[in-house]
Length: 321
Ligand code: UDP
Image 1 (cartoon, rainbow, N blue to C red):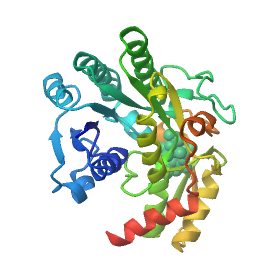
Image 2 (cartoon, helix red, strand yellow):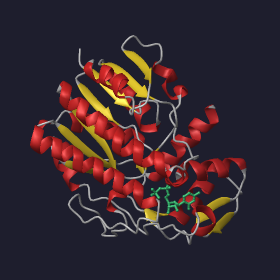
Image 3 (cartoon, rainbow, N blue to C red):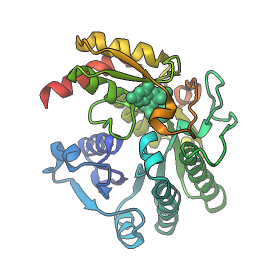
Image 4 (cartoon, rainbow, N blue to C red):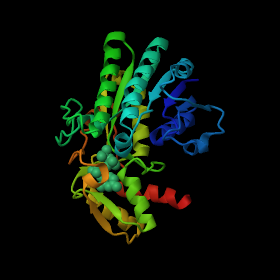
């Protein structure tokens, strides 16, 4: 039986991946320090025989090594994520994303395990090429702008992973996620979709930062998991970087209006300058859309779920709670 370790397994993406791997019949270990992940995300599979959970930090080398030793493949998703989280926890962000990932890669090399590394579209920074290709430049602001530290840590993770691949032949695969969303995502750390949905359902003002004309491509969690699983089985994909995202582009104002309409909410829209939310030293990228030609070439498919369906799936989850 194939065995898998998912770091960050109790998080939003991690818990969906853990469920899918367990449903596929593999033996699955979710590893999470529960700092932002939640045990309730794993409730549906908690009693399955092929599932186990380890509460530990990726900075804990001993525990991590023991876990990695037991599996064939590691999906490394544990990280400090969310613009708000990064700004509130600048030291922890660098520590977890750089030192933690270094631990994962070193131990995977020691025990000869495959690694799938979760990276982020943040690595492109302020590059607004439309769409963004994997080989495009990274354009990052000054170091006093804390937001960019996250982008720098993820780029460092990619450099480390690629170095392990080239010099030490460690099979690694890098996936850059573009605004993944869906049920279980928390709005606490800044993510716009769950925040708008919660505000709409509570009849509170929908908080649009800046002018709302900035655009993103929101990607459904179900599509994301299918792509991760399929890529991880393709031998030729190892040693490479892939964008994973949707082609549908939406402005943040359009997103707010869509959420309001689908939720049947009367919430007013309010515009808040970035400075009021994140302080003076903040920058955002105006546009971010992935080029997914490479993903499609390898998989023969790509994320297709429309934003409207994504919003409905989250509303549906909220009704059940
Ligand atoms: N945003 C917003 N209102 C919120 C939260 C976020 O207008 O309550 C904006 C944010 O400034 C950004 C976009 O929505 O322009 C996406 O933000 P998120 O933090 O979800 O992801 P990002 O793409 O910035 O990593």
